[in-house]
Structure formats: structure tokens, C-alpha cells
Length: 315
Ligand SMILES: O=P(O)(O)OC[C@H]1O[C@](O)(COP(=O)(O)O)[C@@H](O)[C@@H]1O
Ligand SMILES: [Mg+2]
Ligand SMILES: [Mg+2]
Image 1 (cartoon, rainbow, N blue to C red):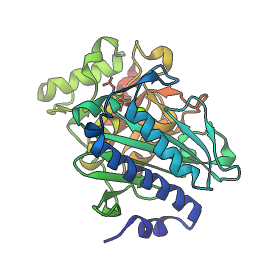
Image 2 (image 1 turned 60 degrees about the horizontal axis):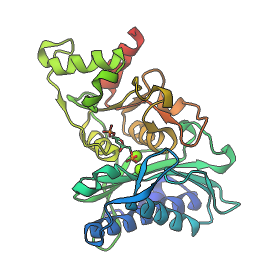
Image 3 (image 1 turned 90 degrees about the vertical axis):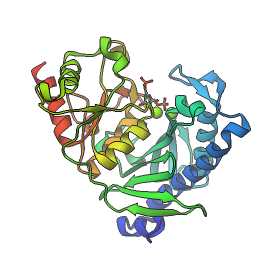
């Protein structure tokens, strides 16, 4: 059995980078422990305040953010933390070579119904500044708190999957995730249909038509409402995730956040042979202009992403 430390030694010579990933893995382990007890501790509800994006924070959004912050404060390799739950970037170790961007608790609307949530993170070099394209990431990962707690991480090579054991260690369960090129599963919030653009409408219409439509193939739809859970399913068995630009989110640039949701997921997807787009360009090539910038997100199996890209090109 390979553990996280052994795997890290095969992926990078940089022990500070390994240490950053170990810190995020430790934060994930601690968040998993808190989540297990949350219904008993009465922590699944609202915190009574909103974040910089005007979203109501759950108590666990704040607790998870504090856990990540505590771990990174003890790591002299991290210069700055960017978080969904922090209005401003938080300076940490002055000489730290790395920046971490995180969504400490993704899918937190699922907490009170005991459905999978996650922690997403992206690692950048300090010298590049806060606003770097996704291609500049040196590592990214997420922790999925489901029936098992999974850590999915990629430095520059393969996207690798670990499971948390009872003792709090991470055991490698899949050395190299491979997203099947073709798939018959798509994930989109279909209740937003009236806001969709023409490309999304045309793509989904074909899927719904199945064998009788332009794709001549039967599709199935899945939407957990936790990006981590939807992406984890796609990483393991293929599919496509869409949170496209629509008429309601257009003024904000989209729904999901570039630095700590879209970029890390695109990085992991590409490491597993999948791909990503905003509809118009590769997610990893988007130039950020704000730490909380939003972006349209389409990710997953190559053939499906290419299919919707073709609709965008025709639009
Ligand atoms: O409410 P919707 O439209 O289904 O959106 C769900 C999406 O929003 C998110 O919950 C946003 O993440 P947060 O919970 O971290 O704000 C994603 O996890 C998920 O994919
Ligand atoms: Mg999120
Ligand atoms: Mg969140």
C-alpha cells in the first residue's frame, strides 16, 4: 500500500510543496472529523452572516475555513491564503514560496441533508502574484466527504486518488484516474433552462432526445449540487459537468469561482485525460482579474466537451 508521503516523494523533489499538500490533506482529515459529528454538535445550520459574495455562510463554512487557515498558518511555505470565505487574501508566512486558494467547504447547501460535500484547493507560486492563470498552478486537489473520505490530488503528472483510513492516514486507491473519452452522463442544474444560452439549450435538447436526437445516443442526467461530488463521479466514470454562463449569471461572469473551484478542477480533469472549457476558451487559460472572479464551467469527458464546444462555435 502506498501512502500520501510515499506518493509525494515520487511526484516532486520540493519538500515545501509536499508539505503544503500534506497540510491540506491534514485539514481535510480534520474537516472530515468535524463533519461526522456536526449533526450531534448542531453545526449544520447557518452562521448568521454572509461572505463577500453575499452568500449566507453555514457554521461549517466558517469552521472549515478556520481549520484550513490553522493548518496553513503552521506551514512556513505558504505566503497567502485566498478563500471563498475570506473577503481579502490573508497574508501568512512572508517568505513562503506558495499561495493556496481554497473553497474550504463546497456544496454546503447539502450539509443539512447529509449529502457529499468537499474541500477544493489550488497551489500557485508566490512570485506570480495573486492573479495567475490556471496553467500556472503547481498542484491542485480536493477532498470529498462521502461514504468514504477521498483525497484527489495532482502535481504535474497523474491525477491520483487516496482514501482516509481509520487511523487518519491517506492510502492510495487509484494511481492514475482516467476519465473515459466518451460518456452518456451529463450534470447540469436543469431548472435554470430558461436562463441558458443557445449552445447549452441545443446540447441538452440533443441529450434529452437520446437515440432519436442529433447525438443518436441515450443520456442520463445527474446533479448532486456539490461540485466536488459531481466532479468526483465524472473523474471516476466519465461524464460532463456544466455550469455555463446564463442570462442570470452573466453580469457576474458565471456562478462558480475561477481560482478555487474552476481552475483546480480543470487541472485535475486534464491530469486524468479529460478537458475543460468556458464554452469559448480553456478554463486554465482564463486571465483572472479578481480573487473571487466567477467563470462559466464545463468539464469532463473529451467527446462531450468537444460536442458542446461545437455548439458554441456555431452560436
Ligand atoms: O444551487 P445550484 O445552482 O444547483 O448550484 C450548485 C453549485 O453551487 C455550489 O454549491 C457552489 O459552491 P459553494 O457551496 O462552495 O458555494 C457547487 O458546489 C455546486 O455545483
Ligand atoms: Mg463551492
Ligand atoms: Mg464553499
